[in-house]
Length: 143
Image (cartoon, rainbow, N blue to C red; front, side):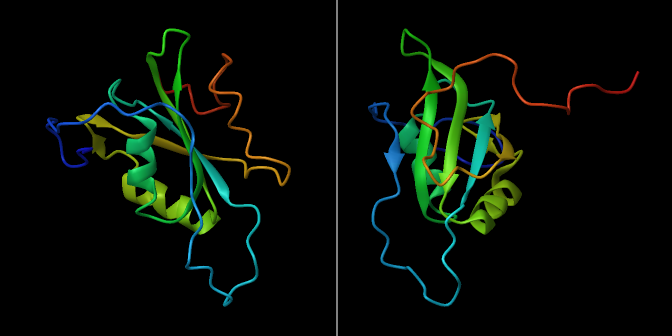
C-alpha cells in the first residue's frame, strides 16, 4: 500500500507490473453537466523509485475518474521518478494538484504540474517519458 502522509515512509508493497492503467468504465456518468471531453493531464515528478503505476492510479483515482496513469521507466525498467496522470475531468485534475502537491508519497514530496489537456485524438501516453528539456519557465530564481 502506498503511504501518503506527513513524512516517514514505510509501507509494504507487492510488486506491480508496469503498464498504463486505464480508468475503466465508471457508473457515475452524470447527465447534470455538458460532456467534458478534454479532461486534463498532470505531470508528476519526485517519485520514489518504488512507486508503481498501480500506486499512482490508486492514489489519484481517489480524486476522480482517470483515463490513464503511467510511471516512466528507462530501458532497464528503473523508474525515472516521473509519471503522467490523465483525468477525465479538468476539475478533478485541479483538485488533485490542490490535494497532493507537496504531500509526501513514500517519504518524498510530490511535485504536480497541470499540463495541456489531452487531445481528442489520443492521450499521448504511449510514447512513455522520453525527451530531455522538461517544462518551460519556472526554473530561475533570485540571486
